Image (cartoon, rainbow, N blue to C red; front, top):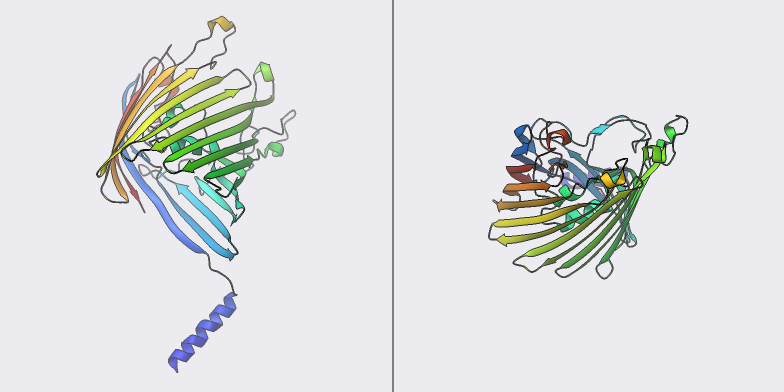
Length: 378
């Protein structure tokens, strides 16, 4: 009788909750901490940092099966710093035409916050997520956009994510997948006279082809912001990004090549390259890369003949030892060799580790950085 009573109670609760699939929610994350050293013109700066190999984070992701190949999905992902419990990517400056948001305050989920649908025709989501140009080099370079050796150090003017965006990923057909994103600047809330209403608007396109050991990818981003330059007074200045990447995994070594291009309407123009390799050896993985920045017009002096080109070479390497499938020890080193007294900062999966590591403190010096750390996935 007791078992019959329990069965009736379960049926009653099921009916009360409605008929349908239940959303499965997963808690996941990364805890990554390192000791980092940065050489600048004010000396060697030391910091206990966070996110050397992969940004420290925790997240919730869920999916509900809707039937016939359809599902509803969400991801909420919060970044944090192990060193001081602060929130990277956390600030929102407010409703001005130079920002792509109409909100103020601090972000709750600073890395990703999306909700959408997946179907046989592709996936659609809205919110904050990665843009195609970031994904192109991050998925191809040996460092995975992590460590001080990352190819992201030559991805000048790169911003990884878009707010206020609509995202679409096509189904993968014969190894090819297409992506698209449209981000709204939402600057129409600003009532200042002459404010360009398109400021902050962005869109991007991406394509990835993968078959066997070969992968090729392309990313494009078009980003609009306000400038006060006399060349384009109080108007929209367009920044255009293109990047392409290829990888081939021979088993004993994986090779990669990345091309990064950026230019704007004011004459800023760079074309940068990166070559990389990753070698597995038992529990170890060794990675190395060489990059070059070709400055085709970053400075705009009154006399064009006086233009200075801040070209640079970039060297980086990393060694990773796997204690388990979820826990790694790592060490990484990188160095810039810069022409004409230019200034390029070194980052890892987060921002430069120390607050004094600014452009003013790396002028006239070839900066280098190194770090040792531990990364644990859960």
